[in-house]
Length: 350
Length: 289
Image (cartoon, rainbow over all chains, first blue to last red; front, side):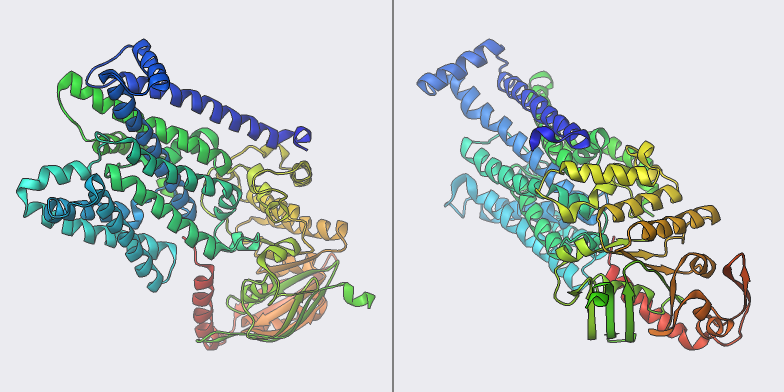
């Protein structure tokens, strides 16, 4: 059948192949660049030689360790988080039917923030099990708690999109307020807390990288399978149901999945602002609204954007000796863009 | 019985009751293939509720309703989507979908794979775009269409769903006179061509309805007040009962024309409350962003 298909469908297949092809090449180049750049910048030849030697002999030299054990998982983690937040953003935008919402709207990021803060202030040093995982687990637990609260409040208050958005807003505010109080009453820990709240990829092991990467890939794949259903969802509840979509359960399941995805993304690396909002827009501007193209393209763009921002963070340390939080960078880059979108399209959301 | 096979919508003693009010009272309605039927009546009279029960989105309290032989209380959304398509009045906000993409959404109930459309899907969509004169706009973003073009896109989308019943909710609400006539003519042409289909239109524009529809169902406060040909239903008496408006009905060029004169004082008071209750329930059901 495949060779008989012509016209629009064929055009879309070509575009999809193009996205995946160009995307993979771009990601490979980004990996190479990220492996080369850091506190010490290596020439590409050194990077390739080192990778070859790792493949053949395992990690032996200090250069191998830096490139393969530090930089490699770091760049893959930026890919995973960038792609994951972008996909979560697409899901929320489609379901809420408002392109101006982002994956943090369920309060997940504020929950994770409070979890990390509580851990840093109270439990760091007290809890010795779990090693480096103790804080992310705390953050994750509170992130899940936050979206459960949002869901519950929304459910008892009409279970519609407006109540959902408002529930998310007040949940986020509540968690943030507690975080602020804790932070201000514990001056000595403020720096650590702020570090988490603004995101960092500076200490990602292979293990952590996989803990983020695998769920992101699996969940994104599941969401991608339902691309056509997401297209139908854009028509709204009633029209989606009239086309045979079991809207209410679809909406609930996808929101839970996307919230979970967001929670995984923020728990290990902190809060990365704006990626989940902007990336779907960039993809939509370039490719239109069909989710079959939108999701893979957003994953590629999200991965490139966040790894690019991380590259910037690494190089700024070299050039200007400043360590800027990556979440703040993405947010700063994102705001003018957001204003641009709002100016162009915000009038439609009266 | 061959005659029964022709009956696409068969409602018997349908009641829809909510906590606060009784939306439909003992609705008896049977619509055959080949019919273009209009449901008219003031806001809150039960037009939308009737349509909602037909497409299975609203639950019946009592009574029975079959649509294309399927019992609406048992049929899945999926099966219903193949039987019955809807044309809404309002189009949701922009999401950068093109005309082609929107029309293609109508093929969703007939999908063969989770991801790809088939060649047949494409053919059907192309033919529909052609039929409604939208081919040249196929790649246009839906937000950049005129209201007439948007309506045609929605009709094309409902058409490619290849339903036996098409439910149309106030198709001419946002249209000027020219597009109103055009759109009503589309339905008239469609029913002539697809004789095993039925089209049900909830409408406000009595004159357009009288000109194009075979049968009119007139409703008030959840009851069917009158049902029959335009001549039978569109009488000054019925219009007075249902709308609380004094009107003349004249025949002009073979079609009935209603000329509204003035509202009858105090007439509407009694059912304004029902209106409010009804619209709030409908809003809850429509629940959107």
